[in-house]
Amino acid sequence: MKIAFGSDHAGYELKKSLAALASSLGNDVRDFGTDSAISCDYPDFAAAVSKAVAGGKADIGVLVCGSGLGMSIAANKFDGIRAALACTPEHARLSRLHNDANVLCLGARFTDDNTAAEALKNFIATKFEGGRHEKRTAKISALEKESPK
Ligand code: RB5
Picture 1 (cartoon, rainbow, N blue to C red):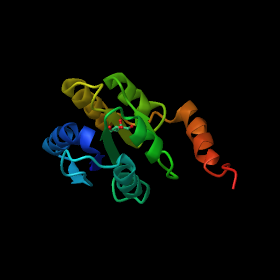
Picture 2: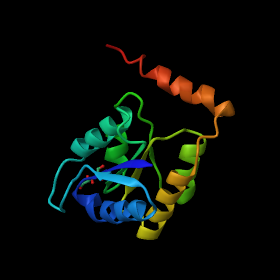
Picture 3: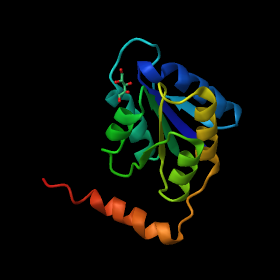
């Protein structure tokens, strides 16, 4: 699986370890930055990862900031992105199973390393269930056209 990673300074260390984990599991990993713990702006990295996923250059994305909130808000601005903030491994599993999420967002200041690793493993391993959830995700996609101009 092609996985695009991104973080701000607050998520930098956790992102590095999650990217290494994903790589060790045999995934094709691309890191869109940031590349240090120097203060930076999370929307820049949310945009890079979201464009890679929405444009088909990556199958899924992983975004890490301090809370996970800024990354999820920014990523969901892009058509075709369904970014889910997961606080537990079960959130990550359900976000794939029911919501067909394509970007996993994590908050490094609220999520310990083991929880984040299990969340990522669930996100990679779980497939969208389809069925009754399909018409709901279609309704989410339709909302992209409803923004007032
Ligand atoms: C950075 O201090 C912090 O605001 C950022 O990492 C993130 O939590 C924003 O949502």
